Structures are given as structure tokens and as C-alpha cells.
Amino acid sequence: MKCPVTVIGLGPMGATMARTFLANGHPTTVWNRTPSKAAALVEQGAALAATVSDALAAAELVVISQTDYTAMSDSIGDADVKDRVLVNLSSGSPDELRRAAVWAGERGADLLTGGVMVPPPGIGQPGAYVFYSGPEAVLDRHRETLAELGDAAFVGTDPGLAMLYYQAQLYLFWSTLTAYMHAVALLGSAGVSAQQFRPLASSLLESLTGDGPMDFLRILTEEIDAGVFPGGANSLRMQAVGADHVVEAGREAGIDTAGPLALRDLFWRAVDAGHGGDGLAGVISVIRRPRP
Ligand code: NDP
Image 1 (cartoon, rainbow, N blue to C red):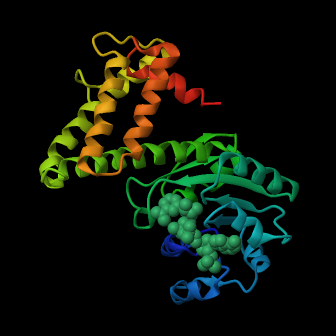
Image 2: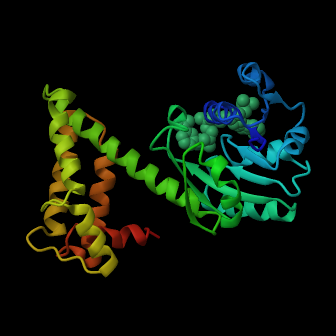
Image 3: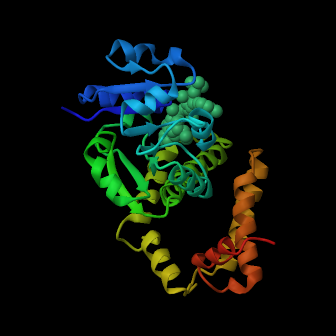
């Protein structure tokens, strides 16, 4: 028989997780602040716990998916979590996760922190993965069950790490796609459609991670790790001037320039800090040293 699982939090993510556990044959108990959200799951065979204490008593493995970490302490309060494995897959800051691990430890529970790298329809589907941090042996004990949500990628014992990886990926995702939207808006101001631009954007993004001369992901990575940012024929000063022109083009086009301005500001701060003759990777120096 499959191990019992409790799911706390039935937003789009938690409800899909509970459905996935049910579909895989786990006796599944659910609890949500607003109990009516459990109705469809109960029809599919889930047990709706009347109280959070009942939910915690129903399974050692307790998967939590709520808006944030405050929701976990709001929901659980003083309920008994001794000997439970709390797997919190909610969003939070790394320090919040570290504090939550202490909170759980003081109550005799283990906390695994996690960041799910797919939206609800992707849960349990090929390609889904989840970053986990915390006690690795505890993850290993429940890995088979948790892998039903997506591949379990253990990133370290520091409880904050799962969110750091999650946020690093999310920032890369958001900023890349937002830059794409800026580019589309810029070209759109002159009547170029997003579909017309898409093949060019696609080929640029592919080349950045390919193995040709534009493989800037590898180039930057090697330079950053070596701490050496040779500019060669592409100095950062030249690129900062170019970034000024991107801002100016946005103004002329009548579109929002907040993103390009932030980028231009970073470039010039790096130049002012003495990296004008370096390459693009010189920008990491000001990212790592925020403005006082
Ligand atoms: P939400 O972020 O809207 O979370 C909703 C759930 O949180 C509901 O169960 C809600 O209860 C509960 N909740 C919120 N505040 C409290 C509180 N103070 N006390 C008790 N319960 C509370 O929906 P999602 O399911 O989309 O996201 C869940 C988590 O997963 C979030 O942290 C999100 O960042 C993360 N995530 C989401 C992804 C997505 O694509 N949706 C992808 C990857 C991660 P109630 O129903 O009573 O309001």
C-alpha cells in the first residue's frame, strides 16, 4: 500500500498535488483554511480533515502549498507536529525558510523546503522538477512519493537553498521574457509584429546557450568564476553608451523604459567603478556590491 500523505493548502498548486497523490494511490488527507475548496478532491477520494491537528495526525508526510510561509504558522499554530515531515513547497525568502526550519525543529518536526519549478498543469508531468533543501536523509526516505510531483533535485542542507535556486531560476525566466516584451513593444511602435520578431529572438536566445561564438552563457560563466572580464573589442563603456540608446529609443517609441533604465544604470555604475574597459561580465561587480 502507498504511504498516506497530508496536503495542507488547496490553491491551484496544492489541489493539483493532492490530485496527483490520489491518482497514484496514496491515502490522501487534505486541509485548507477555506474547506469548500476541498469538495472536488473529496469526490475523488480525499479525506477532508476537520482540523489542522487531524490533518497532521493522518500522515507522517505533510506537504504544504500555500501563498507564503506566514500561512504555515497561521495554519498550524500550536498544533502538534512532533515526528512529522513537513514539506513546504510555498514561496518565501531564504531567511524565512531558515527560521521556519528552526521553528519546526523546536517542535520535533523535520522541515524540507522546496521550490516547484512548474505551474499546476506541469505537476507530475515529464520535465517537472522541484528543488529541495534541508535534511537529505529525510528527503531520501520520502523521495519516491515526492518524485510523483516532479524530479526531486536536492540542492543542500541549508534550508534557504531551495528558494535561492527557485528564485534564481524565476528571476532568469521573468527578466528574459520581460526583456522580450520590451523588445516586442519597441519594434511594435514601428509596426513590426511579435510574430515577425519571434524567429530573431529565438535564434538569439538559442545562440546564447549554444556552442558557437555567441555562447555568452559559457563565456560569462568562465569569466565570472575566474574573476577576469576581458573586454576585447566589446568594452563595457561601448555597451553602456549602447544601453543609453536603448533607453532613448524606448522614450521615442513612447513605451515604458523602467527595465532599460535599470540596465543602463547598472552598466554605467560598473563603468564608473573602473570596469569600462572590461567586457559585459564586469557588471557582476556592481550587482554583488549594491549601492549604499
Ligand atoms: P496561492 O499562492 O494563491 O495559495 C493559495 C493557498 O494558500 C490557499 O490554500 C490559501 O487558503 C492558502 N493561504 C494563504 N494565506 C493563508 C493563511 N494566512 N492561512 C492559511 N492559508 C493561507 O496559490 P498557488 O497554489 O498558485 O501557489 C501556492 C504556492 O506555490 C505559492 O507560494 C506560489 O508562489 C508557489 N508556486 C506557484 C506556482 C504557480 O504557477 N501557481 C508555480 C510554482 C510555485 P484559502 O483557500 O483559504 O485562501
